[in-house]
Length: 359
Image (cartoon, rainbow, N blue to C red; front, side, top):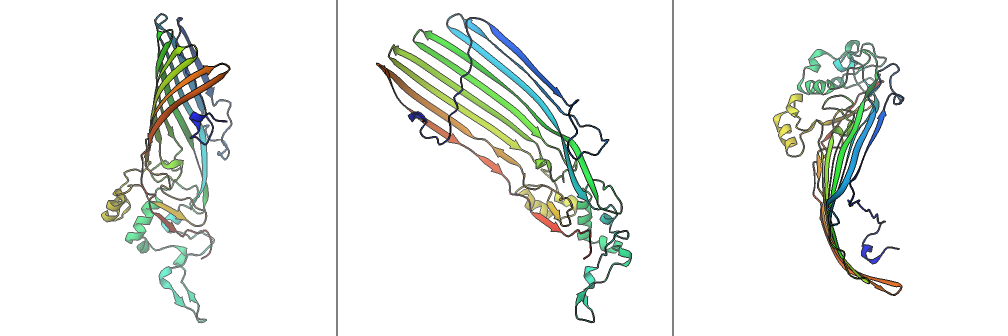
């Protein structure tokens, strides 16, 4: 059962107590080392390929003691963590010759969409491209030039004449550090106060499938975050049966996600400047293209630039009265919180037909 002061919360309550200094100097250090020397390759890794870096290094320490004996004490702590984990992605790529319009070695036929006509039975049909190759003149049109520039962002296919499985290997990283400081003041035997400040900073990066701005995976970019918290507490013992406490808390965090293709200029693909100007009003990102036939998408999807910065202030005051074998607690609190989230719409998605089969 929750106490009355926590009644406005629907979930559980987590209570944390930070450590303070004493009349004696005390400290400690720690370290943790994990390397990938004994780690297995991620599932799906091409046999014989180099093992990707995988490690976790953590270090830190604490130190505390008196500033003024019996009166003022301090305590500080610090932790640093550097982590990388091996990551592997697999996807299907079209044959290299297909991207140039050459399907002469394919087992299926390519038809000219501009030759639709009726056969003797009244059915609409199309003529097959000669030798199953799209003429260079068709690939020279503005629309085809845009398509070819988009397809050039694919990794190099593993086969010139057939679709292939491409394996991308690399690392996901998760690095952070945080520290905390606390100063305690014993004004008298009946009055104790402390002030604590903590800071956290971290960053995450993910495997870029393509290794360029058109990569569809890897959450499309790194995330960086900072968090700050402060607590101020006063505890007064008025008499053996009456205790008073006043507490103020402050917390703020900032999380920024940057798209790997942020600031991309669509005119480099051949689109008119009007398309780029419209993109700049939202998010200038590499557009997303999806293909049928099981081939890998191209471009940013879903994870676009984002910034969040929640902030909270909390003030609480209470009195505790001991009456015989009973404890009576009364008090009040006020909390002010705000959160600003700035994001941009998901870029437009475009679909195209790319099939490894008849039709």
